[in-house]
Image 1 (cartoon, rainbow, N blue to C red):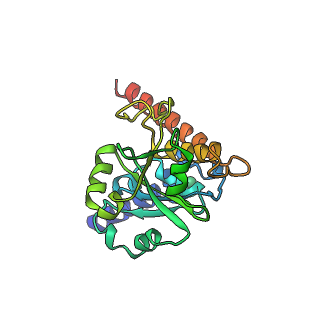
Image 2 (cartoon, rainbow, N blue to C red):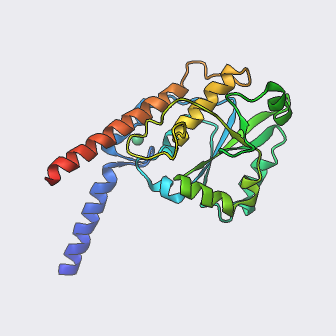
Image 3 (tube, protein in one colour):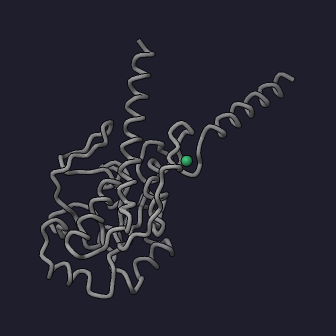
Amino acid sequence: MAFNGIAITTSLVISGLMRKFCWTCHRPAAACFCGQVLEFESSAGFALIVHPHEVRSTVGTAWIMRRSISNIKWFRSKGIGLDEDPEFLSLLGAPDAVPLLLFPGPQAFNLSHGRTEEWQSLVPAGRRPLFFVVDGTWTEARAMLRKSRLLSALPRVSFETPRLSEYGFKKQPHPGCLSSVEGVHLVIELLAQRGWGTLPALREHDRMIGIFRNMVRHQLQQVVTTFWSCR
Ligand SMILES: [Zn+2]
């Protein structure tokens, strides 16, 4: 009987926890951002390769993009097996898109300052860029790239920005290194500024940054609350 009691209690606790979690935006109910989302279709393609650690995270930015960009592609992967994934392979082979890797590197095309002729030879007229974004910590992202030969072989694209990441509780290795959602937002902006893409009609992409800032604020408040309650 005691065993049954424990089982019932456990199931009540689990169902209570389930009710307090939003599985649509993958946040605790208190931090649910579903009501703030302005969904939009991006003129440039984006495909997220999301480390399982980020998929589970309730303070990551992958879910903000997944809920906001209607035509985003999503792969949960550590990089292992990605090169055999039929959906990944079909994206790489899509005739109307040019797959690119959004990641810094010495050979990366710089969206901020790169020459138009270079961009046009990278992404010929009539095709659109498809940015693969590796979402994890910098260490995880580098490991993911080592495990996918096809991903790491893609032409790289990066940017330069004086902007500092607003990810207040996560460290970036250098100024100008942004979180994934900040990076994707900046790419949309840069493409439009340089005449290589169009902005969403109502600037819906700005809403992703608003949600991101709210998330950071909420998380920092949680940290402060926990700190004070631990004293
Ligand atoms: Zn939600």
